Image 1 (cartoon, helix red, strand yellow):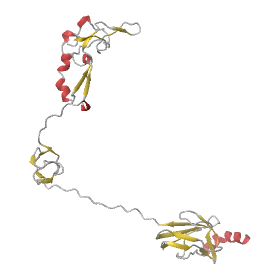
Image 2 (cartoon, helix red, strand yellow):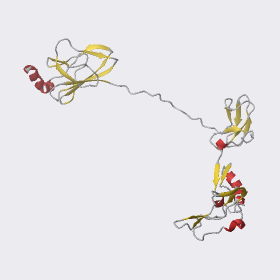
Image 3 (cartoon, one colour):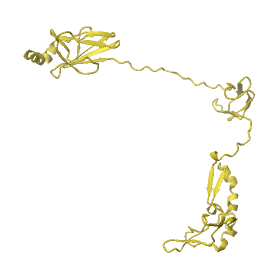
Image 4 (cartoon, helix red, strand yellow):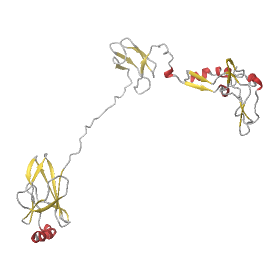
Length: 287
C-alpha cells in the first residue's frame, strides 16, 4: 500500500519526463501540464485496455465506458476488456493533475449530413404559357386567368394563356358563372341593429305617444331611428357582406318610461324594444 501511494505522488513529475502509451495508440501528446491525449482509428470488436508510463502499467479501476471519467490503478490480474461497438476515431485522455490519474475515452462523432437541395424557380420569358390542368379542370372547361382576364378551353388536359404583367404568375378559375349558393345560416354574416340608434328615416314620428327628450344626455330616450332609416341602408349593409339582420323588437312598446337613478326620476324609455305591450302592432316610433 505504501509503495502504491508513493508511486501516485510521483506521477506528475514522471509524466513530464516520460510519455504515456497504450497498445494500438500512438504516443500521447501533452495538451497542458498533467493532461495527455492520443487518437487512433479502431475497428469494432473487443480489445484489452492498459496504459504504460516509465515501465509502470495502469488500468481502469471500473467498467469501461465512453465519455465517463475513469480512475486508473496499477495493473493486476487479466487486463480489462474494452468493447468497441463500432468503427471510429477514438481518443484517450489521461489527466494526472489531481494526483490520481484518470482516463476519459471518447469517439469522434460525424456531423449529421443533410441533403443539399438546390431549387431554381423558372424564369418567365414573356411568352404564352401552356399548362397541364387535367388534375384540376375537366376537359372542355373554360378557364380564366384572374390577372389578365384571358380565357381558354381545356383541350387534351391543357390550356395556353398569355400572363399579364405579373412575372408569369397565373391565377386560374372557372369562367362559367354559377347560380348563387342557397342561403345557409351556417355561413351567414349577421349584423345586429338597435333600430332606434341606427338611422332616422322619418323625423315626424320621433315623439310618438308624447315621448320626449330629457334635455340632458339623452341616455335612455328615443333617438329617432326607425325602419325607414334601416331599409335605406340595406344596400350599404349588403356591400359590407351582411346577408342577415337581427333587429331590436319593432313592436309597440310601453308609451311611458321606467324610472332609473337613485330617486327613480331618470327616464328609461323602451327604445331598445324590451318592454313590448302589443306584439301585433308596430311601435309608432319605428314606422
